Image 1 (cartoon, rainbow, N blue to C red):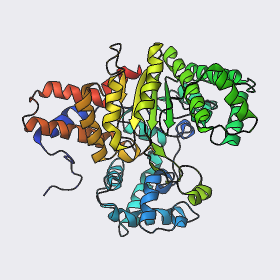
Image 2: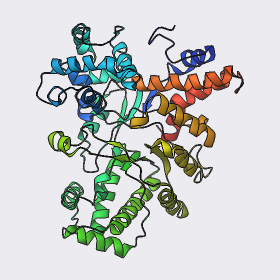
Image 3: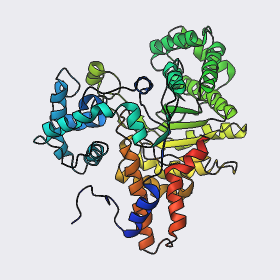
Image 4: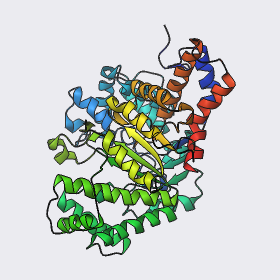
Length: 464
């Protein structure tokens, strides 16, 4: 019987252990997609307690606590921070076989050195132990501890990027770059919200947004602004891809309806999204950016918790929209005019893994190794089973050796354990293949491969 979370955690063979310890373990981290708050990096925030560092904003843990019968008052409500931590500690034993059990103990072990299992009995002791260390684990100290080379936050086009400017001028050794996330620019289902955003966008760009041409000019202005301040990536969080037929006139008409407070028909909305995204993606190509598409979430399902807590309340799930035909049309439109940028596509519905992996193969063009990327396991799929399925699908349908690897997609500074988790899983899969005789025991080449996937491919691909 192996000990839980020992040095060889998840590594089942000698080859896997060699690949991880000798090649993957010490590689730096490029976290090319996360939701870390740049103001907390700029201020080098020191957290007041472990709950503030670890539980606040972590809807993975919130969902588990609700499932365990914890009252909302003790999760996101007015309960004091220690009570919230205690309720989480009491929940942890019930998360066995959920990835939260692994992540929780990995995050306590590194950086805090906690080897004891977290439960209701150990909660106070662990809380005090970590509390004593908090002064040394500021946001910047954590990023350096986890060997983060570059991280890319997620930012609205209207953002001033003031904190990115502070970080870039501070001498902080970790490169912190903004990512252009214009989802609200196509959020036409909420007409009032869209109009408020169009006004905000115009104010940020200094451009009147009464017409669609002005609206697009304002978006382009902010795209230019992000580029001038280090932005080299864009991200789009979509239910599915959009492939409606659009013309300049149809976009003008649809935008005019929206500005009059009128709802679009489903066909008009699909065409508006398709056209607006097409223009934005052309800019990505012109600027040499990488564009990312996070596809498949159905958000804010629980209206009661949405009204109480707001967005990101932990009430999102996997959607089941049809995606293949629209994805094909969307990418083909860009490819036909030679405006298809380097692209990473993340799938949230495991039933579509092969759909995504085969679709990106249609648009590889030989200009860049792995130009079209089947992105890492995302959100509900960034656990052991989801990572293994993504890696196996990519291996079967494309070139795993050109994969740009893992990201955190997290709001927590402790989530960098997920890079270690991913590397262990990757090394274990390859190691098993070697020892089963399915791959040659060319450790030098395989070691290079896991180092490339862990770090080198991302460094080259994103141009950092």
